[in-house]
Image (cartoon, rainbow, N blue to C red; front, side, top):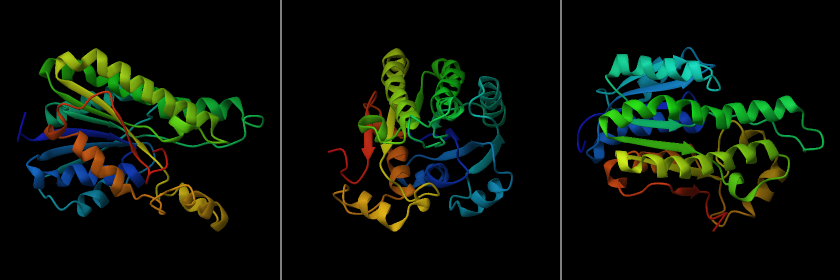
Length: 253
């Protein structure tokens, strides 16, 4: 598959880290890998396809949008089917869809817990399971799951989110072992605190407390994460599987 066009799916791809990943994959032809087609999946944005297409420098890349509920296996299967219909196959899957419903465990509702598990963890199962058969048939695939450093170290008020991301890490390692012999790699990227709509809600005191725990003394950018995803999606990363790469400014070193 070296130097051939690649076809990618990114869940939660309309904003933040997901949007940066879509743009990074579209631009990867500068390193010899051309992503000719990219599907991003989201449940909230109808105007994003045209916006993102305008932001992509590589005019040869076609961006498709697909509205779907990431927690639904039926929607995941429909997304994969539509991607294969439009693009002829899927080479790269980036499981990025995620939400937060923060609360102390004593106050956390069952719905707050279930919603986060369903979007953050079950969606990874849904899309990975749906894409495995076509990847196995073509004997090639790159699967990158977006985890989080809180899945490694935990965080007060995020028992649901931390559990979901720890689950993503375990899922990544187990799946990597299952499909390695089929030419498919499965890795996880664990962002630290990234400048997104989620961290924009922090007040000055909360932001200062965060920075004190980050050796590089800054929050990350969506592009910091996207570049690692781009590498793991490429043939340069062919001998890397089952790994968790923290993009966290040194928080978990």
